[in-house]
Amino acid sequence: MQKNNSRIWLGAGLIIVGLLILMDQFRWIYFRDEYVVATAFTLIGLALLTGYGREKVVWKLIVGLGLLFIGSMIFLESSRILSDDYTGMLVLWMLAAAFLAVYLRDRKHWWAVIPGGILLTIGATVGLEATFWRMGHYSGSLFFLGVALTFGFLYFIRSEQNRLSWAIWPAGGAMLICVLTLLDQWFYYIHFEDYIAPAALILIGLYLIGRNFSSRHQNGNGAEVTT
Image (cartoon, rainbow, N blue to C red; front, side, top):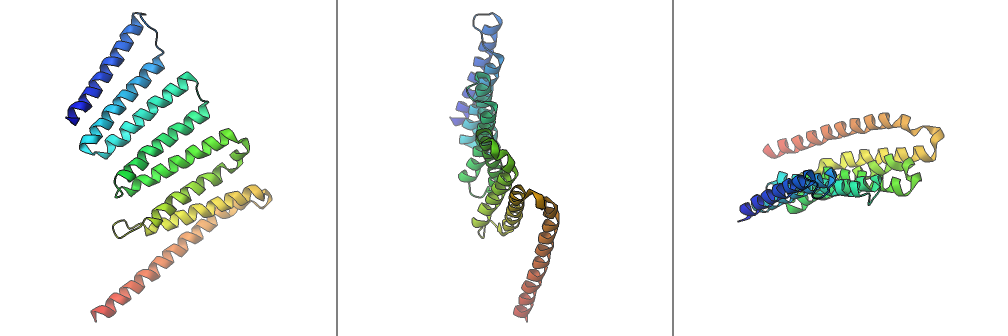
């Protein structure tokens, strides 16, 4: 039944779009091309979401929500309800919601948190820059803060099934870059950006050395047990 519903949505969407185009061609009614395209994206997105309800295929959820949100974006952009910056912010947040919905639907899909968190961060940065013009100076810091929080969240949801202990390293690296870029704005005469690359290399080196000693310790314990 749900499969038939998906086909009904898709078929109805194609019929409606076709009728709108014909009525516009015969000048029976006038529609801007943008509204026709927005309607097409929205109806196809609804059809894919209906299909996801039956098959639980992840790509249908992502693509369906994406098309639905793109249709909304085109409508908002064409109607001039919001400025371009706020429209972009909403689109990014909608795409982020699509990925986060994948994770909330099945916690095994932890990977969806990464694009979801990053898109959410970029959207927030765009919105803050549009609202507070001085926030443009801190856009880099805000972005890396969002990246750090995203990977930090992955680290805190680690478990035996989801081995996500590695997430602490990109979280720490992003937080370090966030702090350095923030200090660079406050103390611009020190040029903190010159220290970002060396600091990153040092952190990577410490990580590799730490992993080496950790693996040796584990191998040593294993050898003692076997003897």
